[in-house]
Image (cartoon, rainbow, N blue to C red):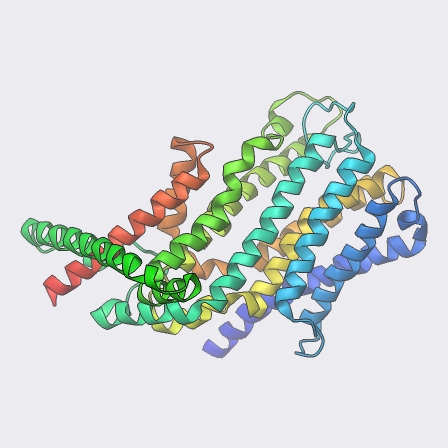
Length: 412
C-alpha cells in the first residue's frame, strides 16, 4: 500500500506537470508551425530573434527533464540558468524599447482580455521580475557552492538534539513550551548571552583578519561564522526589492475591481486567482523560501536543501515559472495577430497555471510556513519595505534559534 502511495505521489507531482507541459508546448509548436512568419517581422526584429532563442532555450530545458541525462544539458545547470535569466530579461527590454506602446492606456493591466494591449509600463515592470528570477537562481547556485560552510553549522545544531525538529515549522516546536516561567526566563538570559558572545567574537575575528589578504580573511570569516555569509547572501538576493519603486507598479486588483464592460466575470476571476498566486509566490516561494533554505534543521534534509537547484523537482518548478512569465505576453501576441483564438489562449493559460501549481508543490516541503506567514504579515504592516522586513525576519530567526538551543540545554 505504501508503495502505491509513493508511486501515486511521484506521478502526481512530477509526471503530471511534465505531461501538461508536453501538451502545452506541442499545441504551441503546432500553431507556430502554421505561422512561421511570427518570428520574421522587420518591426521589432531584435525582440523576435530573442524570443525565438528563448523558446528554443526553454524547450531545451524541458527536453532535459523528459530525457534525463548528464550529457543532454552539456553546459551545466549554472550556465543554462544564467542564459535563461538573461534571455528573459533582454527579451522584455527589447519589447519595451522596440514597441514602446507609451500612448496606450488600458482600464487595467493584464493580458487575458482580448482587447487589452500590453503597455510600455507593463513591459518595464515585467523586466524587474525577469531580473528577479535571474537574481534568485544565482542565489540558489551560490548557496549550493557554499554548502560546505553551512553544513558544519547545521551539524553542530543537530548535536544539541535539534535533528528531530519539524522542518515545516521553525518557531512552533516542543522546545517553546517551557515547563515553568523560570526556565523560560533562564533560556532568554542564556540566549542573550550567546548572541552577545557571538557579536564580540565576530568583532575580534574581523580585527584579526585585517593582517591577511582580503580573500583569505573573507574565507576565514565564512568558515568560522557561516551566519555572516548567509546574511550577506540573503541581503544581496533581497536587495532588488529596494529599487522596486523605480519601476512601474500595476495592481492586480484593478483588473477585477475597476469596471470594464468588455471583460467577463470569468476573466476577472482568473485575475483574482493570479493575485493570490502572486502573494503566495512572493512570501512563500521567494522571501519565505530564501529564509527557510538558511535553516534546514534535519541532517537528512541539509545536503538535499543546498543541492536543491540541481534536483529534478526544482528544475521542473523553475522551468514552469519562467515559462509562465514569458507566455503570458507571447500568447496574447498570437491572439492579437489572429494566429490563436481567445478561447484557445485561455485554455493554454489554464494548462500552464495548473502545471506550474503542481510543479511548485514538491518545492514547498523546504518552506518553514511560520516564516512565510511572518513575511506576509510584514508585507501588510510595513508595506514596500521588503528588504528591511526580510532582514529583520532573519534576525528574529537567529534569535529564536538561539533561544531554542538554550531551552534544549536547560531541559537536557
